[in-house]
Length: 199
Image 1: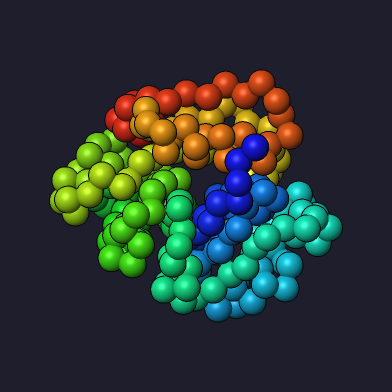
Image 2: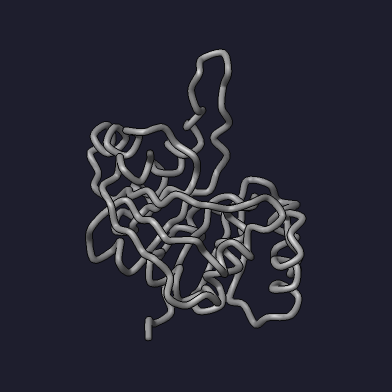
């Protein structure tokens, strides 16, 4: 049995909310968002997205979840920081705008350098290697998500597979945390290289 882990989820869209609901069943989860209205919703056990299962979880289950706009509070003591911020595709440049992800990674390194940063946002192939080199860090790993809008928590509770782009103890712990919150048993877990996970 895994002890309660302090996990921070940055961003409260479909990916962030579904992961926060899933992980807060067994862990201490803090959601960090720049939108105070969203933070108030989460602290009042309301979902920030239209997802029946997330709404049900928040209203009926005994979840250990809080939300804040304060970066210091959110990052302090976190073992894992999950980045679930938007990376919209820019059709003019034919690239994903990864600026929000890069900002969060830099903030975590500054505030809680021992935390493992797990990027769940959509990113281009080679991003993890590139940002790790640029920020001189080995704290960042990537784990792709396979979620449908409106069914995000369901897809986390019954995952087709769990993929983490690193073969390490911390990657194994993170995949165990995801599996621990799922209802499906016998989940296929893949630990790959960063680029393979990104692809």
